[in-house]
Length: 470
Image 1 (cartoon, rainbow, N blue to C red):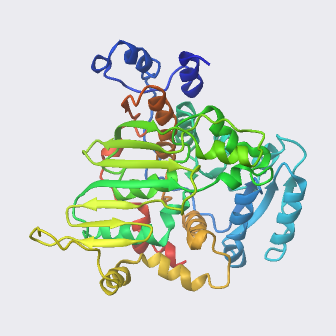
Image 2 (image 1 turned 30 degrees about the vertical axis):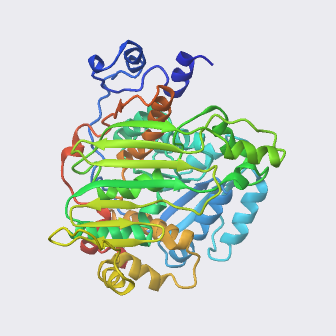
Image 3 (image 1 turned 90 degrees about the vertical axis):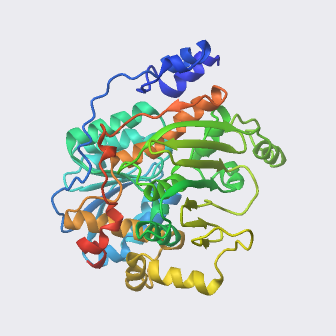
């Protein structure tokens, strides 16, 4: 594939960006003209959006593989408390639907309708009159079309990450959510992890002062998962690494950092640049395992730098090829404090700079901060969810509980459609930047200028609106 066709395959005919063309050379100018702004008319109307309260949220789940099975288990407590009901199940494999039915029957008396006849049978679930919320846990390429179909049929939609991986898809999601007035949330569970909420609570209470820099990542050895014939059906995730190169999985690291920096609520991404290392680890492992696929375009490590409109910087990394312990980094740098994750460490600066002796807080001092700033929703849900499946150390349950509770009460969701598309749009931009020798690329404004409004994060309003104590 030549360069022009490669760029067109990434972004289509237009990527809807405004570019200062005079700042670049001839070759770069030609590339940037391919992503010139096509004057999308977005109103930012889904900020603070409230739908009518739903006493019992009726849920249809599309995709019952690894992730769908996990999220189904998160509903047990809410089903038993009358907050939710599963009314539809769909998967390409009938055995997955049967297994989900059997599990659900232990907590719910009513039987959901099921769909597993063919690749498009999920559409019948999305058309069910009694579905309030469509939960999408399918391979990446299905997230956007399923979300669009659901909203166009009157459903609120919640999709697994990423919500999109092309800029055209991002714009389509924004336009459809604004037109249909349906919630469209990307289920970024790491925003609900205890550590990230602890750091966020400290930031919101001034412990870090003014933020200047943050680092996040998805560093997760997925070689065994991707090379398995069974784990990802048809090895769909591995196939993305054959012809693409960039950051394919941005949101676990970027979501919490964007909350820290109030992205979309007073600041936004300005531009990014991205580069990838050479690829060795995945191909060498594939050859040892005698895999059908042994050549990959995606580098072992992708590093993407983002500058915000207010001058803050973000480093986002992606590596699922290398054998290493898991990490999302979760570094935050402010004028008064610094946090590093994996393991969680906290440094509180002194009023006067010192020549030496900089150390992370000792265990007792750290625990004092932890006790003071643990997000109250975490404390509450640890109590009520005892004996129930938690998922990913508890954050899956917190995420699903919070989503259903907000729908029960008619409250704005913690993450809106703009959050989902902004966090996901990093992927196609990173691919284009990598292909163009780390060309800096401006970031589109999906919010219609509403990012300039300084508003409180919805997840921090939990103490005021009572959604955590339902």
